Length: 136
Image (cartoon, rainbow, N blue to C red; front, side, top):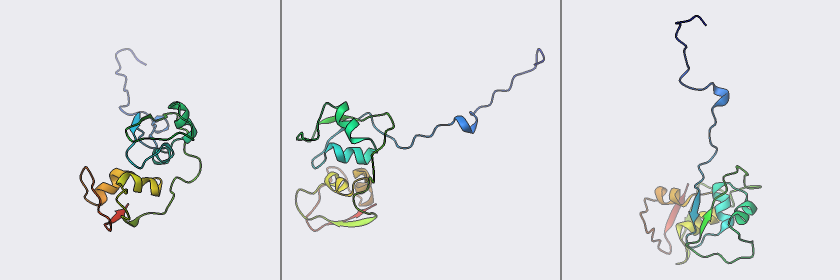
C-alpha cells in the first residue's frame, strides 16, 4: 500500500470463517428425577458412550437425581435417531412419578424447559394425574 493510506479492516470475518454452533451444550448438567445419562445424551446430541466415559460411569450403573454430569464438548453426536416418539404431541400424566424431566426423556430429544414453557408451568413443575400436556 501507499504510505499514509488507511488500511480498511472488515468488521466481520468473511462468511467462510463464521462458525455457527449446532447446539448449545452446557458444560455440566445435574440429573433430575426420572432422567438418566442416555436421555441426556439424546437431549444434548452427544455420544452416550463418550458421556459415560467422561463421567467414569458404565451402562450398568444406577443413576440418582442430583448427579452432576460433565457434558462432552467434542462435537461427536448421538448415533441414530434422537427422538424416541414423534412430537409435537399431547401427553396425559398417568402417575404421580411423572415429571417434565421423565416426560422429556420419554420423547428423547425434547428439552424439559420447552415442555414447561409450552404449558405455562412454573417451578417446581407439579403435575397432576390426568393432566394433559402439550409436547412441543
